Image 1 (tube, rainbow, N blue to C red):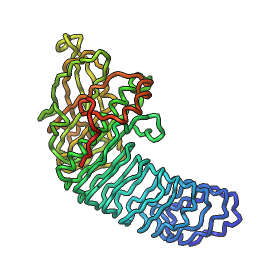
Image 2 (image 1 turned 180 degrees about the vertical axis):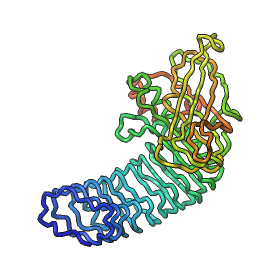
Image 3 (image 1 turned 45 degrees about the vertical axis):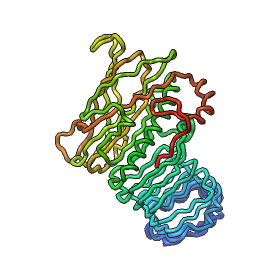
Image 4 (image 1 turned 60 degrees about the vertical axis):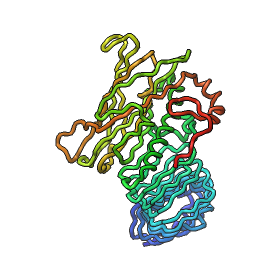
Length: 431
């Protein structure tokens, strides 16, 4: 099937050929100066991309029969979104300066060459045939590699990466991170930081070696420390609690490392002592938690909900006295409409703005954890108990937004330990 002659349709703005499986050819569209949107999703018989106007901002070629993105696409100098999900594309060589989103999910592509993609923020290669990935795109915010047959993920990941999804990559053995800037999430008002959740997902990657899981856990803790400082800075803002933010890290395993989580328990609860505030100024407590659950017999989850109930006791308050305060924090993946399959033990590292507390001379904290779930394989539903749990406390000095802004540049040049103390030589590479 061919589209009728539209050479005279100079005012045509939209051309949608959604799921037109019999479409084999499109005429040249270059003369359609008003054309703003071209949708070719599902045109599985279409093998060749026609010439299109150079002012296009978005192009959807998902599930088409196109095997090669032509060099002529470089003339689309305003293109910001290019969707190539599940086509037959085997070769991509892109030189698009303003491209912000690129979807190559499900492509049989084994190699990807980047050139002049300095503004790319969202890259999806999930389900592709890519075997080796080394990312050096400084502007990248979202990276999806789930299901790729890669063995190594050697990533000089950009400092502002918000989502790293590498689920179900069963051949993945090695993950390493380059040096990370502790101020990587330093501006939530930035247009790149609209996502309320920072995710690092390695679900069902059971071939990861021990050194790699240590790297993932350590990298998550560095990110939480950076977020903790930003959260504490913005705590006084009127809408701080209205738009909660969280970090969720997930990977296979059944251990909690002592060097990241001093306080650990072999069940769903623990208590710890809060370090005395030796300084003269006010401070915040920011909690990072680590949970271990065996999901072997509960494979299917809708919207995993991590519940944290904790009580803080101030000096002299006593159990049940006026010095005790109770808090509840709930962290969710938020995938209400997506079924995820978990197999075996997994470690979850979590923190959120609900876990930022202004210190009122607290001396003790008691925690209870559980996972709320909708389990399609179990009739009882309810909550799942945990195998292990751990807590780390970040102590953050109270600063105003103005103070934080003035000291931000200087802060980029310093390093901090996991206890919030100033270091002496910058962050170490995580190998």
